[in-house]
Amino acid sequence: LELLGFNKLLSNSIEFVIGEKYFLIPVILFVVSTVLCMGLGSCWGMYGLVIPVTLHLSGNFGINPAICLGAVLASGLIGEALSPYIDETSPAITSIGCHPEVFRRIRFDYWVPIGILSIAGYLILGLIFV
Image 1 (cartoon, helix red, strand yellow):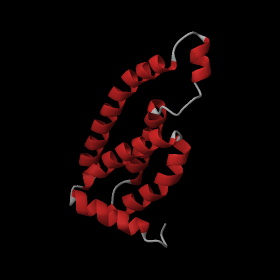
Image 2: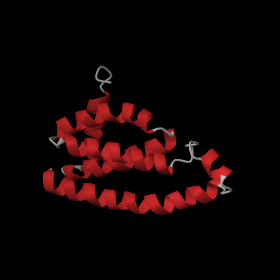
Image 3: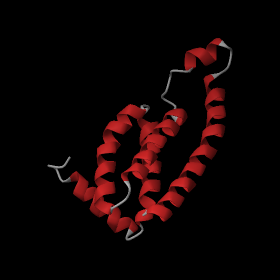
Image 4: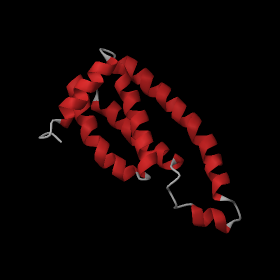
């Protein structure tokens, strides 16, 4: 990625979009990583793609890397819980007579408020530490 100039392109794009509001970077990382994890259906695949970029962004914008990495790691939990492609629970759910769609709806009701609280938390951390 470094040889292709991807990190520099991404840094310039983010700086163009958010300007000097660097406190939004942990929130952006959390939301984008969650959506990516939901689409991939694997938190490990998302970690492999996003963590190197996250480390570069945190160093480039002078943000504490622990906050940015925490946002990415937390997004893996929520993204995998909300992903429709995860089939690890389907056999267990169908064996007790519950339809998988009902179970996904129940998970959605629990994890969306957690995601909203996480966004608020990373916004507060960004305001305090950036």
